Image (cartoon, rainbow, N blue to C red; front, side):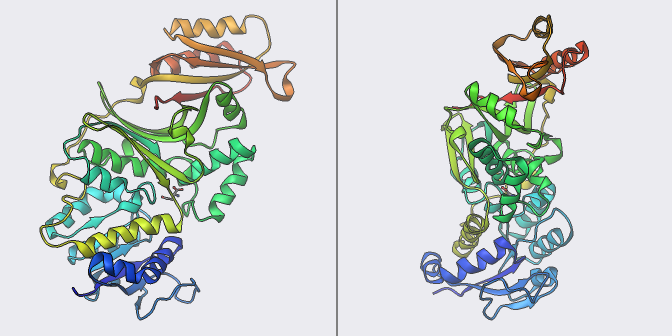
Length: 437
Ligand code: HSE
């Protein structure tokens, strides 16, 4: 049997502890599958005294993750620290430069430094694996990088943040408040260290930027992503969506358009009958549309210790099985040096349907004024619903408009006009509708 693969793990939080547990508990099966043992020979974390409920066996403890990354006693360095700079960046770079394979679950790091790190890995001839960085346990990186050769992708989109999907699902199903659902997501270990990264869309954007690069062969450009989170989604939106045959999901979407590549993260109305609308709780889903394959939808657990550990251990096992000349190819599907800059499509040119919820004074002429602003901007309406609005029902009404396909620029102009007309009692709510099968 080949020599054991020596694994160094930096970061022993929810995911790190789960990875150690899986490697220990599944040792016999992993050895059979990989043809060699996986042995954790080194670990690094902040607090040595903390009881994590795991057996660290004979692993050497490092206070400094860079020391572990450079250690001659590891073959693969697993980064589970998190963060796009600081120790995570320093130790991944150090490990690659020292010729160690790297496995990371760190989407923020890859969104910022992925291409530069891929260049080092490719120069050194080592693997940089990151399955766990996007959509938790779903093997979407493998699928896009290895199983779709020759396909031209036109759109990739999905539910990429388990915390947001968990919150939206429970708000809809149980009528709970946003805050209560977020607390539970944190308790269950789904949320980021800073949960604003989940709810404001940054985490989805980091993951989307990686999928965009794999889909279109472009440089990673997370800062270009248009981003809106879910913190202003109310029970009123969720109820109105349901009445009109939609469900609200936070989607990341990357799409080829006539004006360039659109990358956007925002709450989205998807038809209740669509497959993606049936993706509930912490589950993630990624839809990939290509010329050869048509539409592929992958779904599965998107966050949490075990789901993420499954992807991390899969990446480590790939390294254990790899032989020189039998690797999975470049880190982002094309050699890092050949990833192209791309033409960014402006959000104003986005085309699609829109849901617009207006809370208006209950007085003569409001409806006509709203309809006029829509017509003035060439916006054709698919439906209009009006009902009483909350405790102020005597004096204000809710008007919900669903538009046919139009442009973001037209909608923004129409809403600006409606706001100026002075009929609104609250800020207009605009949610984009996404075509989904
Ligand atoms: N906070 C992330 C989520 C963890 O909720 O999806 C997985 O990346």
